[in-house]
Amino acid sequence: MEGNLARWWSTVERQARVEADPVNPMLLFWELNSRLPQNAIVTADSGSAANYRSRGRTSRA
Image 1 (cartoon, rainbow, N blue to C red):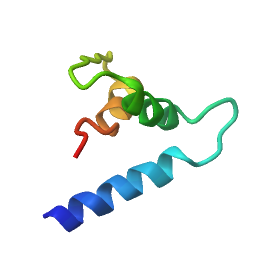
Image 2: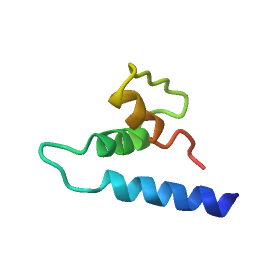
Image 3: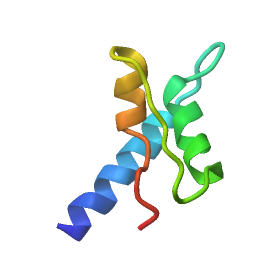
């Protein structure tokens, strides 16, 4: 299970780092996560924003 989770986060990070113009929305959420306090609550509307947020790292593990 831990190996699968590590591979998942590796995949998500690779996808977030794909270059885009003007910005890869996945990168925005990937970078935001490390800058938020541990107890931060982030919400997103339905659609693409919710999808990108759901792929953000929600655990500091």
